[in-house]
Amino acid sequence: MTKNGKMIMEIIYESAEHLTAEQIFIQAKEKAPKIVLATVYNNLKRLVDKKLIRRVTLDGSPDRYDKPTRHDHLICDKCGKLSDIHLDDLSNRLERDIGMPIVSYDLNIHYLCEKCRGKSSPEH
Image (cartoon, rainbow, N blue to C red):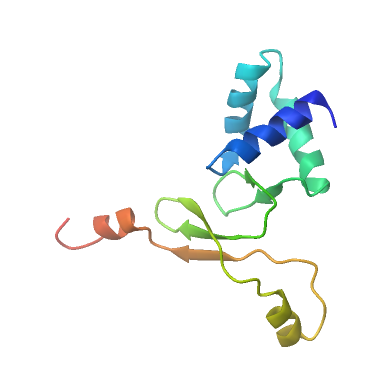
């Protein structure tokens, strides 16, 4: 693994957020001022291909990057807030229900976060 690849992976693993490539680039630039955005994108692709990180794709927003540990996501349909949620692994049930082996799955649960639910109430 390259020095830049390792640095980018560390930025993702140390973050409590789901960072975009641009956010990763800004943090990487602080550590390696000569790094360019193309280097970040190329390394992100390699890290995803090697399953060392995972890409989270949401309609209407840039891809975000996350740790590869088994977890699912809550996505606010109003503000786009993306949060981790840890549910029991559904692999066995999904395999039984569809009648064939699965490699993996990504579960995105769409909801309105507490802040956005407050905004949509009549008294606000």
